[in-house]
Length: 150
Ligand SMILES: [Zn+2]
Image (cartoon, rainbow, N blue to C red; front, side, top):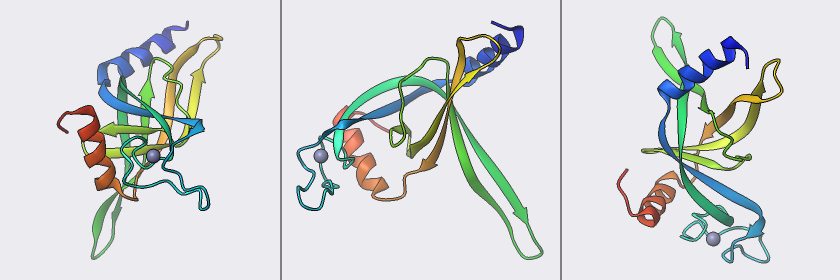
């Protein structure tokens, strides 16, 4: 491992905190998926409306929103363009898996296994987008399943 790599890991470790990770088993359909329409029931507490068997885990991750400020003559706004998560351990995430951090629900778009010259992974990066559909319903069901507060 290169000295630079261990510095990056140190930074990720420093900014990491526990977040929830929901992995969807892409091969196992939930019983709520409608046979004809292939649509899951958004109120299903078994799959949280994802339509797949899910596994819930608490993991250590660092969340980094990337903001873009646009300042014009009459407006000044900040937009969340995209957010990345970083982990030191491989959590075996795949696209459509979710991270839950308080009231934020982020859907994984892409996962990057970051390596330098060495063959071993230095860290993992996940590009995410905020869940837009049924976010409140999802959060309500999620926190009732884990029996905790946000
Ligand atoms: Zn279901």
